Image (cartoon, rainbow, N blue to C red; front, side, top):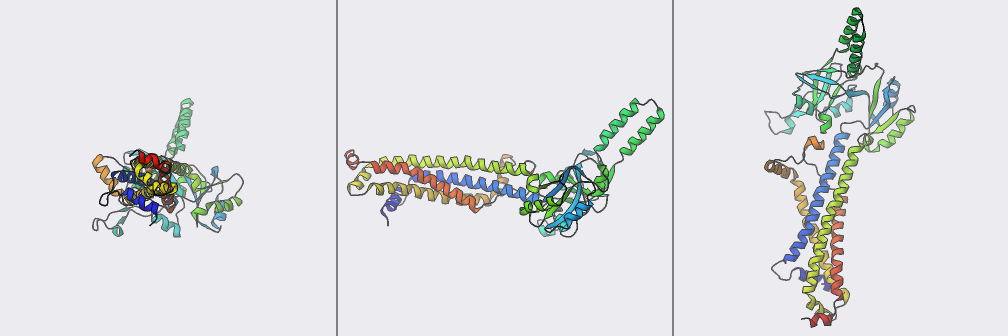
Length: 448
C-alpha cells in the first residue's frame, strides 16, 4: 500500500473501532451540501421537463399569424397541410368571452378550432379527464372518461377540468357565451339612443341592442386535463364557426393557423420552410417562443440554485480545512518524526491531501445516496410535511403543473455536483497539506 494514502486512512480512523468525531463532522458537511444540491437541482430539472411535456402535449408546435385577422385563410391552410413533416393544421379563433353558467359568471378563453381527426383526435382524446370508477376504486385502467373531445358542430364545447371543477360543470351542461366585442357596440348604441330625439329611432336602436346581446349556447361534450393548470382552468374549446360568430369574423377569417410537426425539437427547421410560402407580413412563432418567459424563468432559477447551494459545499470545504489544520498541529510531533525518518515534504503533504480527498469521496457518496432516497420518496415527504405543518409544498395553482412534485436526475448534473464537491474538498486540503509539509522536524520535535 502507498505510504501517503495508508497514513491518511489511519488519521481518519485513529482508533480501529471508532470513527473520529472530526471525520464525521467533515463528511457530514460535504454530504449535506451534495444532498441539498442534488435534490433541489433534480426538482428544478423535473419541473422544467414537466412544463415542457404539458405544453408539447397540448399546444401547437408552430403558429402563423398576421397581427390581426388572416383573411381568406383557406389557400394558406391547404399549402401548410400539404407540407412534409406537418402532421396537423387547424385555423383558430381565440380570445376571452363572457361565460354564464348557472348563477356564475367568468371570462375564460375560447379557442375555436376544426374538429381534429385521425392521430390528432387520438392525441386530444388522451387528454380527456378521467374519474375513478366506484366499482373499481384505485384501478387506473377502469377509470371513467369525462365525455369525449367533440367540437364537430357549432353547439359543442370541451372544457378544462380546472374550470369545470371550480364551477361544477359536467358533461351535458349548457354554457352561454357573450362576445366582449358586443360590450363596446352596446355602449355606443346606448349613447346614440340617448342623443336621439326621435322615439322611432330609439326603438330601432333598442331592437339592434337586443340583436347584439343574443348569446351563443353550447353543450359540454367533454372535460379535458392537459396537466397544465393555466390551460385547464382557462381554456374552452369550441367549433371554429362558434368563435367566428362571437368575434364577428367572416367564415374565411381566423386569428391564426396552428400546426403540429413530426418532431417538436426541430421546429426551427419547419419554421423556415413555412415562412417561405407565406406573405412577408405574416409571422411564425414556435412553441418555445410562445412560452419563452416561463422557460427563461425556470432556467434562471435553476442557475441561481446551483450558485447558492454550491456555496454550502464551499462552506463544507472550509470546515474540512479548519479541522485538518487542527489535526496538523495536533500531529506536529508525528510529522516531525516522519521527516526525521526520511519522509519528503511531498510525502507529508500527500498524507493530508489524501485525507481531504477521502473525506470528499465519502461525503459525495453519502450525499448522493441520501439524495436518491429523498428524490424517490419526495411525494411522500411532501404529503407528510403538508399534513403536519399545513403547507402545500407544490401547489398546482402556483407552479402551473399537476402530478405531484416533479424530479429528474441527469448524468450532467450528477457529474457537475460530484466533481464540484470533490474539487472543493481537494482544494480545501491543500493549505493544511502545505502547512504540514513546511514544518521543520527539529522545531516540531523540540516542542514536545
